[in-house]
Amino acid sequence: MARERGITDNRAILNPPPKHADIAARVSTNREEVTREFGHLTREKVVEKRDGELVIVDVARLIDMVDKVRER
Image (tube, rainbow, N blue to C red; front, side, top):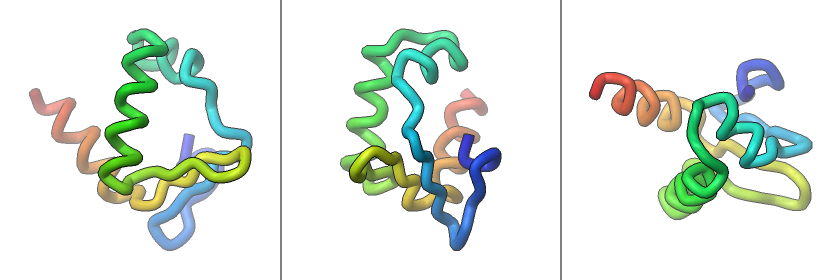
């Protein structure tokens, strides 16, 4: 989604932010798990929520995290 909307200086802004249910459907999980993961990503300062948008603060780190999960 970040690639589709554009990445600048390792940041991406998703406006409007995707719904947790939509993300869950894309990755074959449930909304609750997506909500928990967003909480984790927020605590790790990878994403932040701002006035009607989701900001991916560190796109490279998020890609690295996803790649590590896929290697399992």
